Length: 407
Image (cartoon, rainbow, N blue to C red):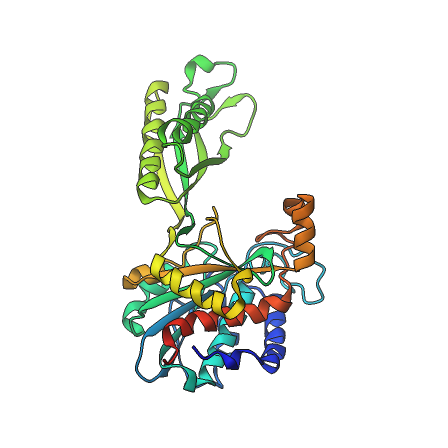
């Protein structure tokens, strides 16, 4: 495929660097990305694309260029409720909000890819759909776009693509077939006891003791109910009950988080949690059935083998074999797959490194990556603009052209 127009994009990068810095300075939290959406629309105004709002603060741009496949590329747009501590000259101007996960880089690279494809239409044929999706961090945005009629408002894609900057070595690209990001589920469990004075425990059903028993039994789900070799995480992140030392409360609340790579494992773990909780409540003589409330539910990101192979081959051809590696699955979660799943189409999701190569190599050699390299969601997370921005633009275009390039 012809990618000559990707080799000299200095002028575009100069402008995109400024876009990136401005987006970084003005982060907006999930489903509140109003100024971000307006800025995206302003950047799209000079291109010959069809622009529409879908899902409130979601922006979709459709670039039509004759007959051929239809490719959907997605970037997420929301920030995190984090106070930035990077000390960058372009650090966040918004208290309590920061682009600590790199979504500002995702926006900028997709804008760059869209502009390159719009100004080099002789190299490809088909339809390119750029989706700027809100609310990834809370697992709301993709579903909001689907609920707002995404499937009916844009042409059906043949394939969907997405990428994420990670705290790995800049200049490298990680791809993999199969699960690359776990399904993630949060769960609030409320169990009920009978309140009493702390000096009269015989009059109570103590929800603290009940909740403590549940926490201990939950540990057996992974160790005794999940087949060795299958991935699963069950975390009890909070246990809240009572407010005074001499009062036995009448209820306790547990907050759980689950991570899985397999739908059947996920369902089995949920069933086991509810079985254990109900059983412990019955054993304790709880006067009321427990309550279960699932929230912040992220789907599995499971790359299609054929799409991954096609895109990986294109990356290897353009960047060289030394730049492309097979990544292991991450236990983080994403809601991107809800978009292709809504259309019933295959997809792939890859990772772009963002840490200065020398810094990363030194940390690896000294075994201090965890200490010296701020990970995504850290208040110190700061992708190196160069070469991350250029490579991020190029990966978007190369991946799209693996489907859209003229023979």
